[in-house]
Image 1 (cartoon, rainbow, N blue to C red):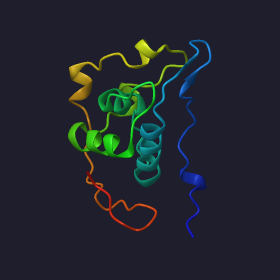
Image 2 (tube, one colour):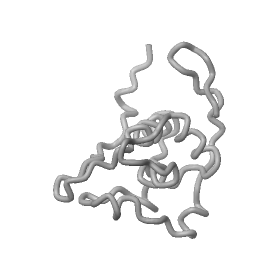
Image 3 (tube, rainbow, N blue to C red):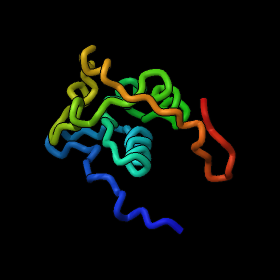
Length: 120
């Protein structure tokens, strides 16, 4: 069994207490954390959530993986999660020069819990 403890990503809240806003981007947060644990590279769940077009009811794994395949992942330092945000500020459009710096991964080897491969 693998000990993932040393590879746990830095904590960041998807809830802004001062803005009283939940980003509803659990799927995108999780996907960015998995990529971090596998690669050591930190990516922006905020950017992935914006590109996935997360709604107030969230999104799906399928939507997030399709978005990752099409747009890639934005390095965290280029589009970080602010400490305080509103829905509008969290989901502000990403500048084109930031989008151009996305990294792409072939994650077809990721498997679901039941062992079936999952890729949109």
